[in-house]
Image (cartoon, rainbow, N blue to C red; front, side, top):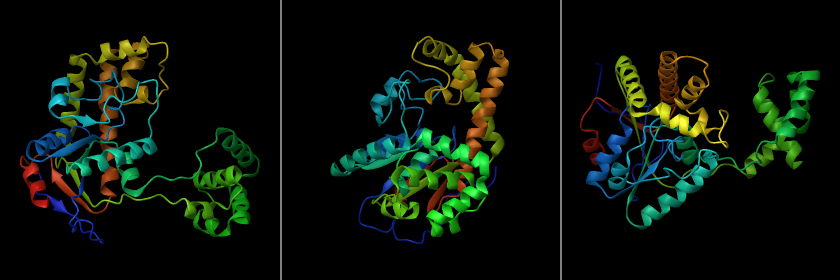
Length: 322
């Protein structure tokens, strides 16, 4: 099974050593037991649970998101669950805004904010801050793409160098995405991109953090859990849930909500693209890929405490840090 003991990675700052109660992050791949650990903490501490799952923000998407049932949510209320209709959008910037309000309110009441979920980009945005630069403009991007198609991205890089030499030095000539974004900011604002980036730099989270990451030492065991859970979702009525969503005239397959793992595959099956067994195989495979991406993100983080999902007393370990 491998080593199941917790691992603490060194931090270069002193955020953990402070008199201020920390914010707790509980992250990890899907099916690793994050929600269960958060509920165990709630049994022993006065906490405010905050959802960090981009799919669970949507109403009427319960089975495929592994959302807690109504009785459990009543006992262990999670903020930021069921706050959007599936036809609406919700992004990292809005999450950060909402989460900060909730954390401030919790701390005012002497509660410990516990943020739990698997949307890693949301965790990162909250910890490191969100860019305040202007949002992408589809028309301007199309214009940049058209020009690049004519003269090539290296020539576009030369153009960027004439506008912002210091930024161009830091961007490779074949880095299409960053060149495009820098030129886009310039065209929208008329300002030098690097100066705009410095002026509107993201604001990192002001509170100290305790970041706990659940992992499963045996990858085969994690894959088996994922497969078992997906089959359970089918038995619980995932297809019926997606049928009801699909019947709505205002929902379609390209919405962010309907692109969530499990919902995309069920929608395609209901459209007749493939049979039930193929849908299940594709859903399991997509969930495993999601878990792989989540783990990859986690490995690149710093200042985190790794907890084995196979260890039964993780809540007691967190007590020691608190």
